[in-house]
Image (tube, rainbow, N blue to C red; front, side):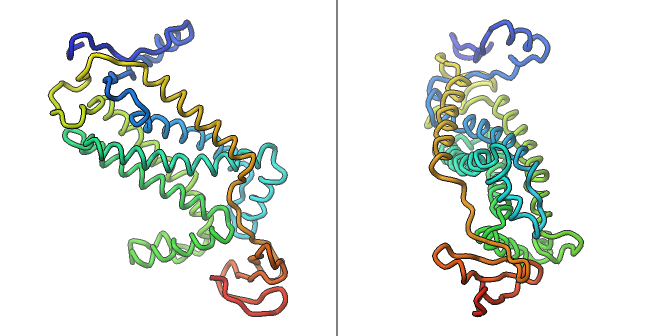
Length: 309
């Protein structure tokens, strides 16, 4: 391999199972050189984020089996996940907290790339793809917040409507005016479980291809003076194992958080005659009623008027 004398490619586990898979799938071709300066936690944030997203996909698929994305049933299905579904409370809490952790690692990864100048030529397009990944994950966090169908979800939905109005004709999709045949909650659910994940996976594939093509960026302050696929330093370690160990510790921390900190779900009880009722914990008799279809203000269960927002 061309490059600095003594440089070697990233190596993987060479056990019998790995060799069997590698012979048939060519997995070794996915390996790329890791320079010495990249052997630290800051340079593993991308891999940590990837593994976190994989766990989110798995837990999300499980939660989808119980969630009913209709305004009349969404809240009840969330409560079913928490109270009845096998491992539902644990999986939901893991999904919730891990989404927050992935958002943090994704932001830290973007900051590291910017701070070390890894966005410079010839990696400008990969920086743009990375920004697209950040925007897509923000969309997933936003739509996931609405799907909780609690007070926070209602407020997020209002922001969604405001964004649509701000964008004018281009933002019609974000509003209830787009169609009356399907509730906006169902459309946001489709975006959360199908549209946005597809975009995320597609952008991630391009992102990792460009990383493999260009290799890890040079040390900050050094000019890029090496062919793609080679390393500017001779020492390398198995970065994959570093990623795996770090993300394992993070997932364990997320699991521990599940025991004492359940995923957010604000008070929102259902009144069959009035609609949705916002019930403050300190005064369960005076929660505000919010009409799902019209969004109009109403009266609390004691007859007093109120405004939901």
